[in-house]
Length: 232
Image (tube, rainbow, N blue to C red; front, side, top):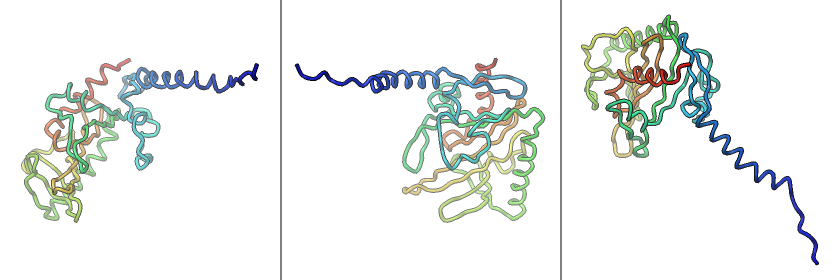
């Protein structure tokens, strides 16, 4: 009778336990929550919607709130398909330099009932806009509709402010939408516009591609509806 095979109980336990650990991790990501407090209201936000748990971009590590969200601040990421279902007119796909991609929505929400966060940014952004106007920056038609005040034009990029019209009134709850554009290999423009909006005691900071610019004014209400489902 030959020698009995050697057993490796530690390896057996490891192999048995690994699937359980992975399953627990997946369950935590799907069903776990983190408590946040925004403008006096508590929210239990599912991990699946926390930007910092689902996306890691090294060049964003220095941005406040991404590594560990501070009190009164929350970074959300919502899947494009989900947003399209709840926000009429939102396109699930956007055109990028490498082709179409899912237009997931990333939003920074700040509890800001006294506008302490929003007010200085509002003053600075409109101040920059007025400075460009005073310098004689040109107005040009925007391919997505409306007009753009061109901030700067480089060889590989363009910066501008985008408005429905140069004669549109200046809103008290929003900074001028600031945009950055460049061309893909087919000379098709690829752009992103950033919006900063203050409503209902919250400040919303988010970016949209041209396919979704028409829904910008309704994004805060949509986010507020999502937050309402997580109230505690």
